[in-house]
Length: 159
Image (cartoon, rainbow, N blue to C red):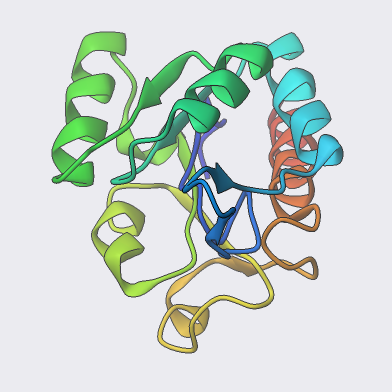
């Protein structure tokens, strides 16, 4: 397996618990895990590019991505595989050098474009047999960090 150069994740159900929380004023809330944030930092410090590709569009995710210094942040992606292919072409990265974390059936096409795939422990049952690694952590509960650590260990063993 190739050394991973790009780590991409979906947001809802991977970086969050998949819940959609609203207050009485219509403000949306999401719970992110600080350990996932450290996972992104660890990847970045090791030279792995990071990305979030999601069909959702929210200001709060934009703030989270900025805080995490995500290299490739794409919201409102109606065709996520097309976005990923554009990134690979622009960065000169091969599909085999991509790790992807997804949790639902709309992630299956993305997983076909990645060399290493993960899903949180609570991913939809249709996803579980399609990934390389079913993580022990649930979405929003450190799953992205677990995947990041796996990638770092993998890359270190490839060196």
